Image (tube, rainbow, N blue to C red; front, side, top):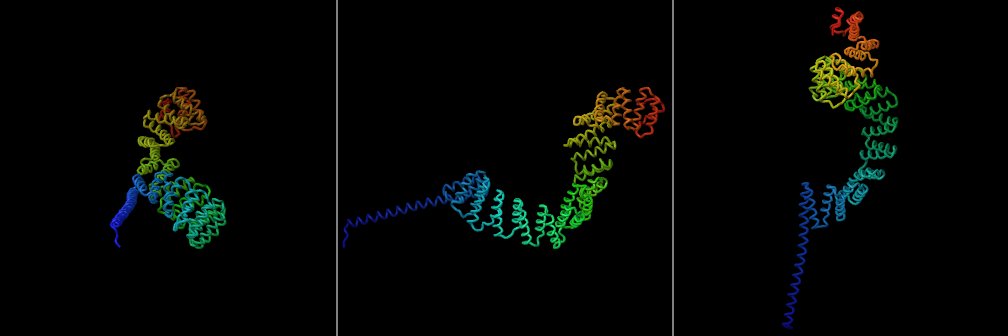
Length: 573
């Protein structure tokens, strides 16, 4: 059969059309595929670059690149996850939650997306929401049981105690009995006032781990804390049968017997604990320090325990310090001083020991030579401590080493940030500068004291007396001594001071009146009696004056002129 030319031409045209259509369709398909691949490549590139800057902690650049990645691939859960993480760091929590949700919607089987969402919700204080996220993740995904611990903590934070207990029970079903879980459950039960369940948990722990004495101790402490001392005793005694060298059990038994008033039994167990080398020195010191604060109760026990510490730790400074503290607390100052000195041989860096030592020697024992020696040693170690300079200066003042005293007291005043110490520095400086005849500085120091403490007896007395001796500002001296007597109307020494100020003012009759009052109040020093004789002489009562001078001569503190006064029957000043 022959095909006409027309048909041949028509077939040819059709074939060409079909080929053209086919080629065009293939080209369009390839074009679409190229565009999609390009978008994926772009998304991958931006994500990779964003991850690089994320590692470098350049979160601004990282965030911009992750957002560019999402523009190319909006359904990339990893990009949403990374953006949520960055926004969470920056505190942009609402937007962070949006991206965390989008990551989970796209891929609900990635645990890190759940964790990020839970973290954002926690930051928003939506603890219930965070707990729900953990619940969902743990139910949906395998190998996420570890997060039951976080879930329990969230419930506990919300005080959802029943749900927290339920979660801890799930943990035990998965991992068995765990001490930290048991302890957490006990705390919850105790908070719910369910002591019975808390005890049951402790007993279960002991049964599960029969060789662990710490769990017995924990249960015993729970009994004691809840007033069930007697219930703790069998557990502790059983523990000591198995582990006779357990000092914690001995200490708890000592505490129980002490609570029951059985001092002998308490001391027996306490001594056993303190002779046990397993009981560390720090705990021993803490226990004894507590007993020292409770003195005079348990005085004999503290004495015994401090001796045992010394036997067990003969080369430890703290052993001598605690013995010194005990003796100091019971007013055995000299013995306390000796133990403090021994402690310094082992460790001289404890400032409190030096301060205690100097306080005892200066205030109680009044051993000024020792104060000078030890304060100088202390100053080599603690050159910026005002109190050490003070003791050094005060001791030098007592020894009339006025130059050294002035230097140290001035240093103490300069370094002091304690108002009371500054006052004492000025008190001593007033005396010291007077001794150095630097009278202006002496007055400045006394005035500083009176500004802080207008009723300071010591300064009112010394300041007015020294002004009288120098015959300076006598009206002001009279004002000071009058104020002193207003505060202390029957003090013999202050009556003498006021009488002497009046004497210097030439008010002899008034002066006699106050000196006689001083003697009537018991003033019997050679100085006072000699003053009385001087006043009588000024009043023309020479015989009576000589009698008083002769009386003063037999006393310790009469002036060097007393013999001349008697011999010549004249007043020398």
